[in-house]
Length: 357
Image 1 (cartoon, one colour):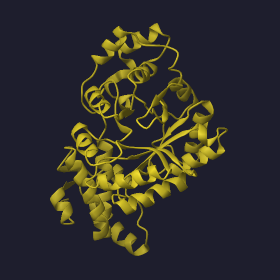
Image 2: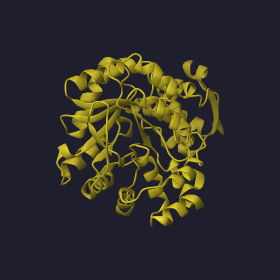
Image 3: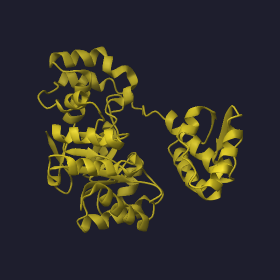
Image 4: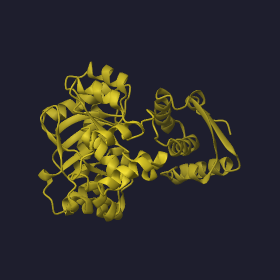
């Protein structure tokens, strides 16, 4: 394993396990397998809803807690100082630990600096060894560091061969913030696994394409957290420290950069659409939370309004209502929605509590 030193001299493994969607007993088993194979950096988040599984896996593994590096993130609705403070304690409880190695704000919010003050306090009190942010672009990052007293140790962002984030990395390096990457395989986009150039580079070192992609980031000093579930894949991702890409290899890989996100937003839109439909069926209170989420979409330039076909996936993400009374109203609404072909939603209509079907 190789390590990187953060701006507060904390040492962090440069390769870890991404745990998104690792839930339940199978998730616990996968995380335990990773730890027992030699993974020491485990990346989770409150948004993933699997901190509890990570905590159980750590307890049941054969590795002492002090030999692990645990990263988690807080997010909406914990967007005030007081709520962020409580969220930190919730993460500590879920993870069954008395400290977190790295805690991040999951994405930019209007109240990010207020949330960050709670992280700064927890950092100074020893609950957190390092603090940072996630999904901040260059302008957001520069604006943010002008308002905080502790410069973020990490900004975790999407980073891979097709979106190499060199400019952001260089900018943050001036201020002491390390770029940490997620989705190192571009979520399978761009046919990177069967790219002839990447395969040829790998063949020289008896490595596969995924190992070349990880090694590229590691040689740039970018900690990364690929997700895997099978033992074979876990082993492959960890086997990247016995070769070095040469300058020509790096030049070829650099030429693949398209400087754009390959994050798949289709599932996000379906997710939000399902939640909005559910919230409209429930009542006014929950709609406020979805307005905030929709505001975030607008902020990132993803969408100000959209029309989505009504499909089973829309309803798959709508959670069951908590009471029989709400269930009746929601089922009636669902039955009506399912007779429609499309739902059209705008930020304005959402604020008014309506959408056009």
